[in-house]
Length: 435
Image (tube, rainbow, N blue to C red; front, side, top):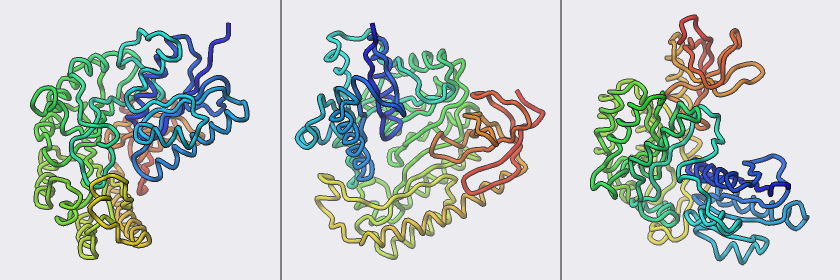
């Protein structure tokens, strides 16, 4: 008998991807032919796992739903399910506006999808999943939700309050993933800094990472989405102690001007931010800091923007992303501040700081020419093998283009001598001294 086919389309962030991977595993355990982000979607059911964070992401999610609604009308698929952040926030609107949707699930009740479709509960453990990334790395989600309530951010409206997973369950997942061949763990959450506070009454990220680092088979651990206020300072000691904890920290700072930070409700000021950055770089020499900045938030006058530019020049972030403020309905910012800065001004400011960062990134990369760096190989392309250093997270950071003088194995580590540098790429060759 033909297996019933379900296609899962995953949009948005890596946290969404983890949910899709869990769903795929449960579907397969229940006898479905489950596919992820297939280029040839056809058959019985499509599940769109949506993002609802910012305007562009919401637009992409709606357009994707409409695409499969049309496929349903054309008879190419039979049923359309929607889950994730967009449906968590706009469930009634979606059902009204897109009646082709057969079932709607939110950010958390998607776990009912299996039981409602096949009338039974899967035997899958909560952390078991299908790895959709290259098998040597995976994302490890340690909590959901956020208690910070920054004035520009809709995440708490979607995900609710911060909720940590237990250390024991996370470590079981790590052990499980190691058995699947995972070597590199990208630890993710809406707010890493608060991990454990709800369960244990104190910040537990340092203890979690310390215990992870001692587990057999865990070769790289990388930390994503720390919050600068109430930062768990002991994590820096853990990073300095363990060579398999990458000297990398993703910490969104958003701005540096005190008035803008106050309007954003970031719970930190300029002086405290500068002190934190100094502590990070002192305790973990050579660390690469990834940050995200926002331009055009209410209160950002020309003087505040110039202050932000000078901050970028002085801080010299190894990795930096930025975006222009877009008012999100029902947030504190939308209710209390006028979005008065013209869009063209926001876009001009965004372009200016990204051009500034490109120069900084090139200078930082040029300093690596002549160094030999440990690189993991992600894939093979016609002219190069493509890899990353410990300072590079998948999909968002620079890659290393490795010459094909030798045959290399995907998912293996090699010592690579850096020969050329570009703003967002390095070029190198494998040395004779390898593990």
